[in-house]
Length: 111
Image (tube, rainbow, N blue to C red; front, side, top):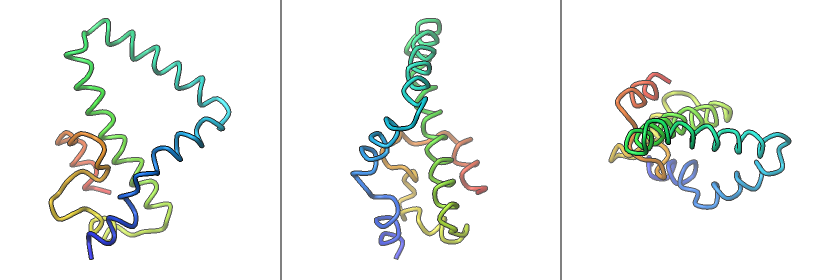
């Protein structure tokens, strides 16, 4: 049952492309994306990629948990169903992101 729910709500390989296409139509998104890229590049140059890249991966994993939780809550799903959506192997909610930090997991488990 868990894998059926996982496939239904999370294993959607076309989702990222559809979201990217939609975001390109949202006023201000491309400016915000360019501003973020500029700031990220500046920080990466200051602290070095060996420090910045793990930070960015951890931040993305944490944000993926939050975005998925907001999405699922927006569908009106309860916490019991959200926990059932987690695959038995305890892989991250958003399989395309790196394994989240302990802080991100703890935050996601309190949802």
